Image 1 (cartoon, rainbow, N blue to C red):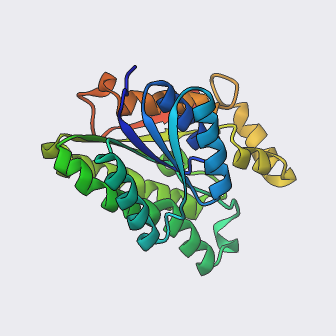
Image 2 (cartoon, rainbow, N blue to C red):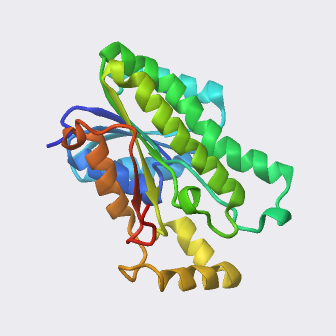
Length: 252
């Protein structure tokens, strides 16, 4: 097992890529802490992990609320005396042209997709620093690397995660903490399915599918395998890197 007895804190762990992360990391021996704004989803995933013989707990957590983040992180660290892995996965997008967005849209998307991850990372880092080790992964998006129609503010927030990844990797390397970033392309999650069902957005997504060299959309489990690589010793000499997982659609 690549993560035996490691404690992995995963945001957005209630469905989609977060669920896949929880299942795979638990399979590799990690104690999984599944956090999600929809607590019932997090509980279902934790139960699924336990049904498969793993160890997991669930927390109802909105990462945009700093006080709640600090409380949950303190509770987890107090119980397990460590947090070895942080997967900053939580995120959401509302696809529409920039000129149709409002300031309220900007605040929502930036608070969730960027500032929320600052809250979580700021709360978890002291425990990793104390242990002089740790691995952090941010889930950004290829929309942050090359742009994507209808995802202007989302892309801006996700681009912020890329910059944050690189700076944090430099700052925390002296503490033995590695920080990397994954940029998924179109991946078949519940949010993806909701967008695909929208006639206008779905048409754009289907047109993009034709340009993917591997000729299909990604699967959450495929993203989870890259997460595992970045948080395990398989990438022990890798930090500050950004990797697109998009079937070749993006090659940068």
